[in-house]
Amino acid sequence: MDSEASGEVIVVGGGVIGLATALVLTWRGHRVRMWSRDPAQRTTSAVAGALWWPYRIDPVERVGPWSVRSLRRYEEWAGRAAETGVRMVEGVHAGTRLDGLGAWAGEVAGLRDTDRGLAARLPLIDMPAHLAWLHGELTATGVPVERRSVTSLTQATAAAPVVVNCTGLGARDVVPDPAVRPVRGQLVVVENPGVRTWFTAADPASDATTYFFPQPGGLLLGGTAEEDAWSLEPDPAVADAIVARCAAVRPEIAGARVLGHRVGLRPARPAVRIEREVTPSGRVLVHNYGHGGAGVTVAWGCAEEAARLVEGADG
Image (cartoon, rainbow, N blue to C red):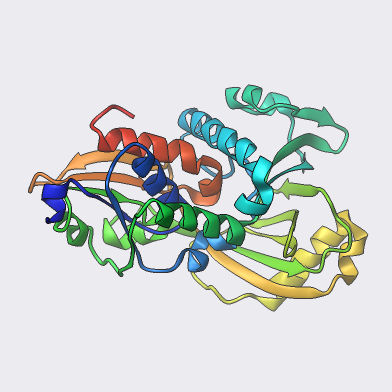
């Protein structure tokens, strides 16, 4: 039976957005195949620090509901942290205040202003463990995950009547959509000297940020937000500056042994694209990309909206 006769949906892209979308479609009764150029552990998602928080993403009025939908899932999965990689962890957003946030903040329990900034208990996701768990959930439902490099979405629309485009930064070429641009993020992983809480401080006037996230594999230090930078090679001078900024907040970080370096390219866009179109050949193509630095934060809300568009409903 070919794909058109069987009514299969092909999800293109194997990062957290693609995995979430494929799972939601499967849960809703669709027959799904996934095409991914890379294994999940080699996608940008695997590099993410992965604190739940709407960060560098628009449109604001839609991001709030998407984020809250995802938050509810993470809160549930935190009860199985060893399995899912999701934990609820305390921390502070320095320079952020409750009255500067959108209506979505009213859905987040325990947010409170303090002298240090906005204190919160939020989901912190160990992405290697979480991606492995999502992949296992997907394969357990019988969804085939195929290694494919796609240069044009017509390759997918020729193979199935419905295609969901979750290609992230790759959408710049495969759509093609020049509005998708990389925002380079560099992190340093150090041996945790005893830090149990997370911390973030962003300077809107700079491409340098300061954050640390305690993960099972070490303390993740960041970071950068360099627009239109494509290099995946860690910059030693940038790494030194990251450690120094974090150590200014927690001095014990200064002497921590460096375990590794990570670089990822966030798929930024002026606004997330979740949209349904019908191709000239009558195929349905649903786009779900452009999530910038907040893919983990909005993944499940966006996946649910994409699934509704697959079914022909309004998002």
